[in-house]
Image 1 (cartoon, rainbow, N blue to C red):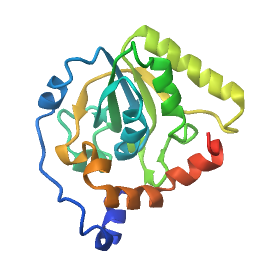
Image 2 (image 1 turned 120 degrees about the vertical axis):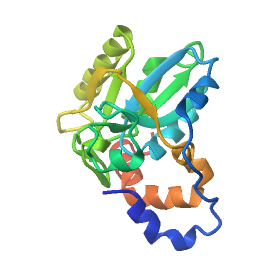
Image 3 (image 1 turned 90 degrees about the vertical axis):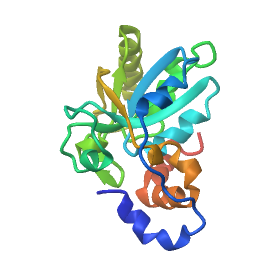
Image 4 (image 1 turned 180 degrees about the horizontal axis):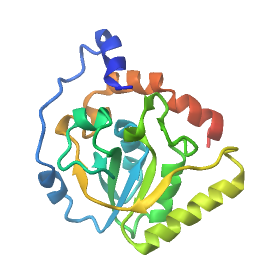
Length: 209
């Protein structure tokens, strides 16, 4: 289900939100993050909802919403959301390893998704919203697999964890209006997030942790 259905329903409460802007060149955004020395790529459903928890971490210098894991070159949001590209919505995190570790990023990732759902995340259904960890080197692969096995052994989730752990491939930054959406359009974002069921699920699983 395309999340904009919820936005249309709630549009009447969003009159004070700033208008959406046009697309941008992804290389420009990446180029501004030259100080970042680490890179991680995660998919956890709606990338609007995945940006805030990582942005809160000390040492994270940028979070970029985008698309990865598919076959279509330079995909658009319309193509990805239609499920015809093989891509999933993803988030690329640039970070300073001296201030935050990849292991800490993994912990944030696991605590913000439903790792037992391979067919989407919360209200967004389809492989274009499937969860995944896209590792950039063998150390990241090892840490990702170790964190998955630790979570499995904890018994927090009764069902099998189905998050893909695969090599990172081409990452395509999403259109500019998707970047930092929760800051640019807070009313629309909160309306969507509440209706997505994400927070209710995370509260049930993790409580106030």
